Amino acid sequence: NAGVTQTPKFQVLKTGQSMTLQCAQDMNHEYMSWYRQDPGMGLRLIHYSVGAGITDQGEVPNGYNVSRSTTEDFPLRLLSAAPSQTSVYFCASSLRDYLVRFSTDTQYFGPGTRLTVL
Amino acid sequence: AQKITQTQPGMFVQEKEAVTLDCTYDTSDPSYGLFWYKQPSSGEMIFLIYQGSYDQQNATEGRYSLNFQKARKSANLVISASQLGDSAMYFCAMRELEGAQKLVFGQGTRLTINP
Image (cartoon, rainbow over all chains, first blue to last red):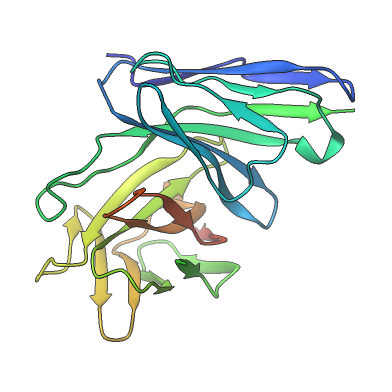
């Protein structure tokens, strides 16, 4: 059971390049999400998904696309990288909690991807 | 919209002392969950403790306890008998338990344990 995995760990891009950050989980979690962490800003939600085929925007979605074709995978795409997207990116997953009073619905985080856009 | 406020950017504590990290929250949802995560210098996010809005008792996990005061909308983390390995960033977060179930984080508190 690997939990939540992210690749790559580090990436340097030039302005205008595109890339995909990979995220996978093997816990059969319905809920997956992407956050970015900037100094002094805490973590902010980019996009999230409540199940395969369903995605929605978070707090800071501009410049990012997501898709969820399987329960396990939730890739984050940067179509045209900008220096403002230099950040640490975390993927997280959890059960979707339908019995909200009785479970912990903890979100488990991947190890993060440190992205630099020059 | 939910909001989490952590008013202590940094704290310095002597080893073996207890420490309280403050967290206040704002939400209009009747159901929500409150979390604390630890982020050491290595960067990973480590789940520490959870408190549900309907829980009658304060949550405890080993040396961690959550002082939940619903009327004051506060969810302070208490670490007993602090250790050098507790030095890290600590984030308070809230998750709405209905609708989108999104997680909102505070800005964090950097805790330094001195020997």
